[in-house]
Structures are given as structure tokens and as C-alpha cells.
Length: 88
Image 1 (spheres, rainbow, N blue to C red):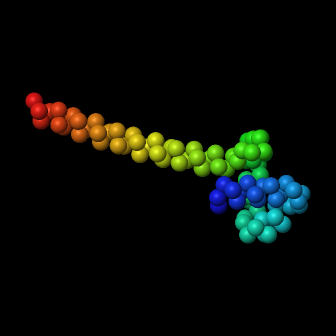
Image 2: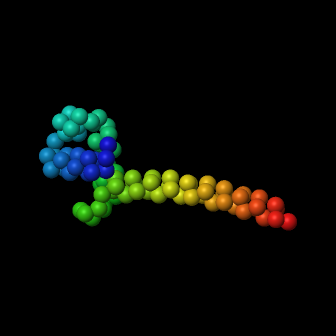
Image 3: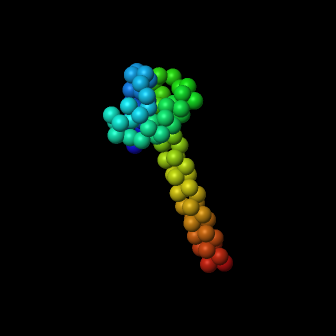
């Protein structure tokens, strides 16, 4: 589920004040997932404008990008060492 969907689900749960099961059934999600989302949002205690789920997605994206850049750097280092040895 997208970060926006999770945030809206948490907001809906908080506004209604009903059970996880009722809100989850309405949204078509697992009540356990909704419970986890609510707990994570509460734990983050982020200001109203911040979305803790979006921050988690951004963190995952940045970690993937970091790994890709590390691999590219290794390839470039090996290539430069190869070409440097051929010049000698």
C-alpha cells in the first residue's frame, strides 16, 4: 500500500474511534496491518504535515540508490586499475 493510503487509513481510524476490524473491513485491508500502521504513526509522533510512511519509503529508495552507486563506484575503480596497468 502507498504511504498516502496508510496515512489516510490511520487518520480514518483515529477520526472514527472504532475498532481496527471495522475500519480495516471498510478499506479492504488486514486489521493487523492497520494496527501496525497506527502504532508506527503514533510512535513517530510526527507533526501533522509529515507522513512517517512516506519517510520510510524515501529511506528505502535512498538505500537502494546508495547500493547502486557503490556498485558503480566499484566497477569504475576496477576499470581504472585495468586501464592504468595496460598503460605501463
